[in-house]
Image (cartoon, rainbow, N blue to C red):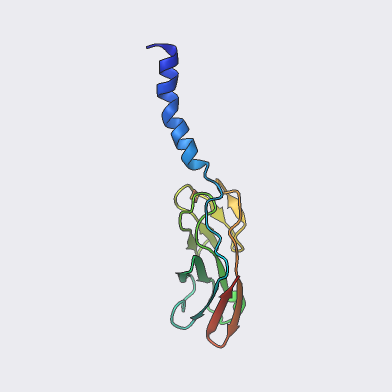
Length: 132
Ligand code: FES
């Protein structure tokens, strides 16, 4: 096989793969978020979560304090795959390419290189308000 043809044939699939993986920054950061959820019915147990308006809200422990909840954008900042909460590790995982984010949304492991947007929380009775 001709050298030039060999290089084109072997490199093309790799370049297509790299182009797909280089979409860093396509995850949507929701804005003008403002909703309220009932913590006794929607996310009543530690490790449970709910997704609304592009935000994942997680209960990290059993206490009914605002610090028992976290809310970040649900789309990974690498290529917009929905992240999931890992209760045992207390971190968010993206199962598409393996990015890992802290509770605050900071990147622990790439390929994502931007943090998840986190949202403000306030708790009044059983009503958790998410804004940002
Ligand atoms: S979409 Fe690639 S690591 Fe999340």
